[in-house]
Figure (cartoon, rainbow, N blue to C red):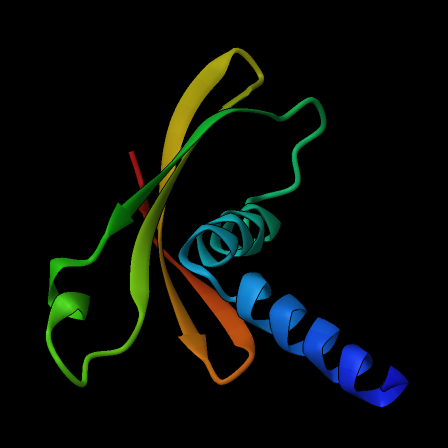
Length: 97
């Protein structure tokens, strides 16, 4: 009985960890780790933009992440693509505006 409840808990935890909302949050954190380290940098906002191509059958699970930052009196928006491979999330910098 105890083993069954432990397995049930793990199944629920894993499914929640990779739900759409959990995936989006983890993508933002993965992208934020890629930001340049500048003293006083402040993240002002973040946005998740679904990749329309990822809705096609067989396509990977990808999102675009935009992070607005302010540092040294300047503002910028960094854009990343975020994809999941097995249990790892990769955030790749696409550019800065």
